[in-house]
Every structure is written in C-alpha cells, then in structure tokens.
Amino acid sequence: MKLSKTLLLIIFGLYLFQSCDSQKNVIDNIAEDKLDETFIISMSDTLKVKLKSNPTTGFTWSINNKIKPKVIKKISKEYVKNKETADMTGAGGFDIWKFIPVKTGEVFLHFIYSRENGKTDTEKYYKVVVK
Image (cartoon, rainbow, N blue to C red):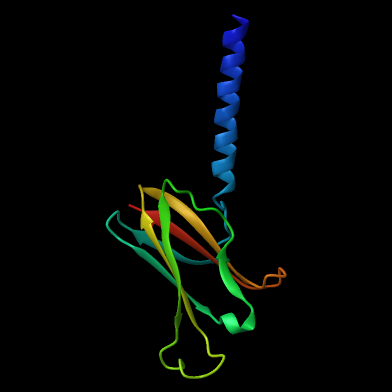
C-alpha cells in the first residue's frame, strides 16, 4: 500500500513538472499592442519569419522562449544579405527563420535582437495558429 502511494506521488510529480515546463515555454497573455503579427497556417505550410538584421553591429536575433515542439518545429535559421546593398561594407540583410507545423494548436514566438552583453535593441512577438 505504501509503495503504491509513493509510486503514485512520483508519477503525479513528474506530470506536474512536465506541465510546468511546457507552460514556461509559451508566452501567454501578450498585450495586443506588443503583438506584431498573427500567422495562421495549415499543416502543409512552412512558416517563414524574415527579420531585418545586421551582424556587423554585434546584434543578433534569437528566440527568447523555447518553442512548444508539439505545435511547430524550427527547421532552419539563415542570414541572407540584402540584394540591393550586398556590395556595401557593413550593409545589413535578413535573418530568415523557417518553421513547420507538427500539430494543430497555437504558440507564441518571442524574438529578441540583442548583443552578447545583453543589450536589447528590438523585440518582436508573433502568434502562430496551426489549423
């Protein structure tokens, strides 16, 4: 009897730990004025997020939150020079992030344009709905 209660407590604890972890990974209740865009995609789509970037400034884009892998999955991040200014020293380009849907649901993405020392320049918030 005591062993089954202990086992039940361990299983319940693991469930709570997993639930809390997945809740931390999604940004809930983003104020409407902070939400930059909502993407509605289907299971056959690839989501492409294109963000202006200039690595010569020391700033880089990163995702601040872990992505809920049950909804979307990051497949790539690539820096592409701006075609019009590619010849110019110090000219910027774009970071292009690609994601594929894994199942229906919704997730928030929080991108931060910052330097390694922690100085933040820009933040972007996107809501992704997979139908």
